Length: 394
Ligand SMILES: Cc1cc2nc3c(=O)[nH]c(=O)nc-3n(C[C@H](O)[C@H](O)[C@H](O)COP(=O)(O)OP(=O)(O)OC[C@H]3O[C@@H](n4cnc5c(N)ncnc54)[C@H](O)[C@@H]3O)c2cc1C
Image 1 (tube, protein in one colour):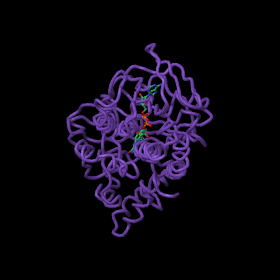
Image 2 (cartoon, helix red, strand yellow):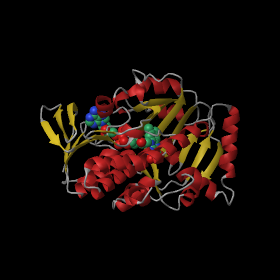
Image 3 (tube, protein in one colour):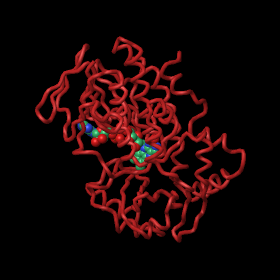
């Protein structure tokens, strides 16, 4: 079997590993000029964690991951208004959680396919001839490829989806927020943050910091807006929007890199009834972005690749395998999307009342006995093991 994967992000690389393990000849095309080194911290738990364990990735993820001590909400004067031991999260997730920078997660996945797949950077797909029995593509470097299957893993603004299923606006649900992330070097901020996760205790606009082991600091921002349009100059937008938060934020904004090194996007979900069209199948954010509100997009990207790989391994007929992937995986991500939308005001309070409620909730979570509740909030009510989803009769 020959497979083309569009996108060397989390979903694309995880799928590449599964397909390479099956003995497929895999070509991955990636628009970026090389592996990215900017990004944000990902809490990796839930189905993707289980899948990563099955895929033999966990030891490397733990090696590259971070041990976060506490997460705290801090006011404009630097006073901690609410905080909680990260251990509570770890306990609620039964230890099955790792905090890892997005570039490091991609690195671990890339290492797992090193030498086994044809990985091409600075390449996009220009044209797709999608037939009932295979695909032919023309690439931006002028070359052409034939394959049995094409996997679109090119993220929330997927060009594969647009070319095969139609324009983005038919599937994208804007959630009324913009997010940004950047990494900067500053010993003063790093010294204050160290191995904690600090977030501003603020309404409608929020900034957070993680200290990295190389002395840098990862900053992430989220703010409420009714305008889905992205700014022409993301750096200028970040400086303007987050200037009044006090505490360490002015210092961090002063060190914000140029727009090319700032991640900036809408917070949105992708909702589709169908991810398969003949021999093109979508995976990860391109098919079912859940948004950072659900906190599991990376996890669901890896787990989706695992489920898809399992179907292709156990069902000899490719079309039936693709249909099974959708049948088994669609209900799981739909549920996570709903949970994500419901948690929006918890993630970013829209009023001082919601802010106070969040403080109370975080403080209450320190109480003994709330682990089960927290566990449910993290991994969902009825936890189904990934192998039951991938293989069991559902
Ligand atoms: C601030 C923030 C915090 C988050 N925190 C968490 C968290 O704590 N836990 C969690 O599980 N998830 C988290 N997520 C979500 C997670 O990052 C995404 O869900 C995940 O990256 C999706 O993986 P993906 O591979 O589907 O898409 P992406 O990571 O977007 O990868 C897509 C890849 O395709 C490439 N590409 C795009 N277009 C083309 C093209 N035309 N041709 C070729 N290549 C192309 C891109 O360059 C990229 O490499 C967070 C997201 C944000 C923004």
